[in-house]
Image (cartoon, rainbow over all chains, first blue to last red; front, side, top):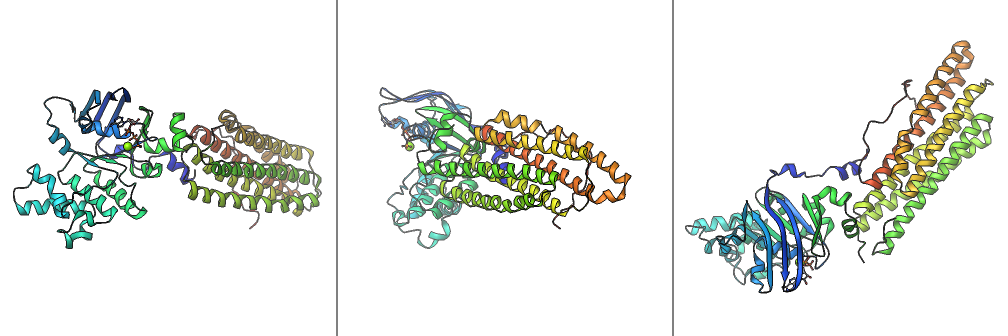
Length: 271
Length: 238
Ligand SMILES: Nc1ncnc2c1ncn2[C@@H]1O[C@H](COP(=O)(O)OP(=O)(O)OP(=O)(O)O)[C@@H](O)[C@H]1O
Ligand SMILES: [Mg+2]
């Protein structure tokens, strides 16, 4: 048996490595934008302490699904969400849920790095401050420096924490946004094409970071790069035309997908 | 067959690989039947030809290797494409080995110096070769058609070869015990039989690869095993 073929069979990072618990559970989730039925009856389990990749052609509903998890769709007037979406067993649509708290527990990193026009320090300190996570100045410093370290950015910016976040390179800005997201100690981090504007080196750093972060967080990433999904995730879900077509262990999805539509998409056969 | 890629050049790459594998398969089949003919008729010319044709198989195998590496680098293939490409690489390795084994038989033809000839032994060797050739033909056919069921039946058809090899082994032992002057030629024939049997093993490898290419799953290890001669192979080239 050659190594290459064996690799195809065994997931290099089995989900069993994670604790096996589902952090986020979606049941029969439907999303409408006005008349447009953007997501149809989605059932998806997202395991804790693992990276789950959402893939699929443009417009298939990946971002829409991500936005369900932290109720970002609430901000779109035409959007309507039905079904259950649980985090740790609790429906995020429960009227008792505090949306601000929810979004603190579910951080988000966007396609284009979007640092605030403030200092590097303030970019990271912002969340902990509004959530009252630091009792004093040294607490805050600890949080900011710790978050920058975990985002793999500290060494590059430690001498200029007072400079504007927007003065950083694209890759550094994205890591700053990740530092900002993890500063409030979320449980779940959502990443919507976080590397699409980055060069291969910056991309590699973010990917490595994801692998480290997953020991403490649950990560969901949307990506158009099949190779990235194959590299960073333990589970992969393929969406097409608002339908969750197939989900499974990443190694299997990319070597032997079950559904023809998945196969066509990941091999580049959709016209 | 699967639909075309958005990138036409990718389809061309894959077709190229398939075409080279098919050409290698054709040469390997020819090498085997020529090597057995040469052995039967003690035809040194034909044996030389078998030895010479091995260079072409080696060239094609290197060509596949280079194309596979380039295609992986260029296209980063996934799913069925990845399995196709890995499959072509593996099959070409097996075919190259089959070619080597045929060449080994041809070299032995050149080394035979005794007049000893047993019709029964030769029929046995020929019969084994026929069985293995049929396996190779079927497995190459399963590759061309991407037919997992056909590959599976080749994979299961290994016992016949082992059985003939066992009886041939016993027969040759008797000849050797009868007359020590037969020993040298009988050993040569034993090795020829062993070479043929190993070709059969490569045919089963190819069957496993085709099955994996098509189904995306490995076959288990519980293949029927009939070889009880447990000879130790000594490389002929050494
Ligand atoms: N605010 C909105 N109003 C109306 N329709 C929307 C809105 N946002 C998204 N849609 C539609 O919902 C569908 C899913 O969009 P979504 O943004 O989730 O796709 P996506 O999979 O993230 O695509 P991409 O890969 O291009 O980012 C699309 O048909 C899109 O046009
Ligand atoms: Mg999107």
